[in-house]
Image (cartoon, rainbow, N blue to C red; front, top):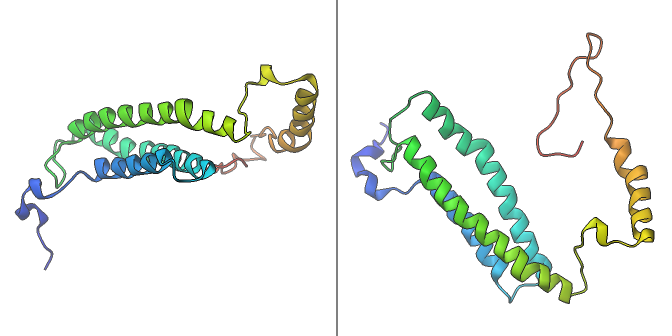
Length: 164
């Protein structure tokens, strides 16, 4: 016999979506931890960014589909899809602002102190630009092949979140 979770009351449950975002907050906590090596801290910011991308691709889209379909049924935590989207928006705005401040005000300066410069293309010397152009032409451009689609060449499967 299946257990009826609704019999416990919504106050005993937390939002699955907001819980996932709190995992993201913990990633940013790790990125802010000055006891960790700088590249590890940058890695946590990258993991956070990847998690947010996936979160929107899967969970937010699912909630938007429910709203578009007129679903008003609350989840086990008692929150309706439209309310969940509003709560997600508020939390994601705060988290991404924190991510931005962490990168711009803390991690990029720490990288610079460690001798790792993140610069705009216009700041490169002519020699550095030539090196990057050669690298692009030899290693990147060859995998950017345009796709030909016609009856003899049906549209190929394009994988998500990959380079090729």
